[in-house]
Length: 361
Ligand SMILES: Cc1ncc(COP(=O)(O)O)c(C=O)c1O
Image (tube, rainbow, N blue to C red; front, side, top):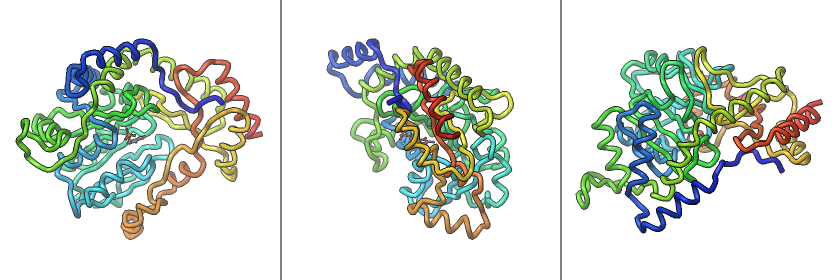
């Protein structure tokens, strides 16, 4: 089976983990500090706080901004559900908005029905690593604190800055399907020392200093073992990105007729996920099965949140505003993710291309 995704891990990662084990210091040590320094440099940020997942990063970001019960937080409708889940977990309401048909991210055009004055924060997503128009969106949402969900976009560039560089707080994930992995892991990025201080407390049981608790919070720390993998992966990042770009370009050449995601003018995506829109009328899940029968793993691309049962309240509120989600619905129904990861051999990619052609014809 040709896998949909697979991290590139080698003897350097093994050696880095072994070295940490030999020190006996498995938490809150040098590796986390080194990983944070390098991620901050890469994203042009003053503060990077490594955490246990991208979802933890989002939750801590919203808590640091004071989001709580009864608040409203903007969330794009097309996504893996975690940004909306953390809003709900905090007792707040996701204000769902559609995405653009070309960029598959929310753009200012989708904000017309949103009551900006009621937003406590806005989550903007660089979906599948494609840079969102964060600066334009922030201008369209004056006074609203922006959290950028850059879970997928390490190594992408908006044209003005690296992804993760903008927003009051940007959050990344280092899950194995991302361009760089620490197993599980994430990071909060900010330039604001006060927010960085709050995030530091929230990450570590609410402690302001050892044994002094400023608030009740959980444990969202990243381990030294995970950070050591991340440090090695960061050194590989340029080659990982180049391999992804080459694979994506081959898919683009192979399937010129299938709609795909486009970066905004001047921006560069990291190709964390390569998705296509299948011709309408085809059953996507049947296509996934047919590809599996030919030895190719593929999957649905994403979810339209307003269609999910746990989003009933957000969906009802959106309906009451007259909001519709034609693009997110279409992408959720017809979107297919194809295998793309840096170790994917040319011959295997060719097999994927031939299998897709055979199934679609
Ligand atoms: C857009 C988006 N946000 C957040 C997350 C959550 O990241 P994690 O799996 O590290 O919790 C994901 C994970 O796939 C994602 O795609």
